[in-house]
Image (cartoon, rainbow, N blue to C red; front, top):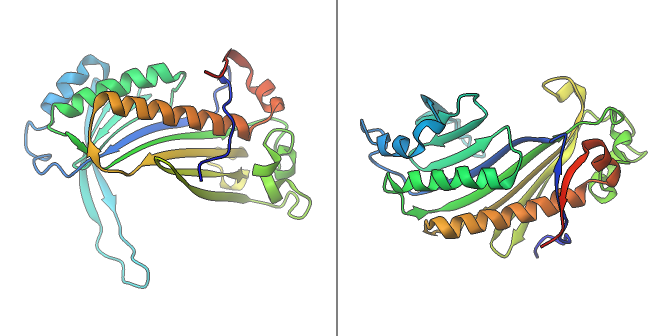
Length: 261
């Protein structure tokens, strides 16, 4: 059953609650990934847009239920960043991702993703195993410092018990992970109150982490992939706008608004 949210206007906010936006494409393992020069054609397509290049190691620890912890494995990664470090492209043996902490409009993100897809083609990736798009919002409001004071700003159905009298204001963290089957994949909504004790900057916030993914295997086609990412973006926008109230929109300040297409 797809998410039951109505189409919402597209709004650009003066105060942007987005902490991070990610698009990841998983593909079959590239066996030559760690060979010298393999990544050079990828870098060449990116040109001068991502001048900061570094090689990193990703450490993975598997903990199977009821089994002893296995030895950690390491995976080589290439990270390409813009001059300010606000946009990153990460390339690994089995995935490529685009991420930004400076998201303003979908058109800008789409243009960067198109460049990434062109770069992928240069290292022989023609097949995909998963496409995911994730928008992570950390919403702050000066009048919402405790769980119950979020009531005016977050949809009551989403807030649930956290905004009620039963739990009151003694909640430190209350996060919910909702997974839904969609016609073209899986939707994941992680949301909830994060108190100052659990916040990195000791400021309470409301998390809205919205993820759409298609795990169907198939040919990696640039036009079709961009179209699907656009569709995911539209649905993520609808989820966000349904989750917040007009009072929060007033706080974020709408700079521009576009009617539903």
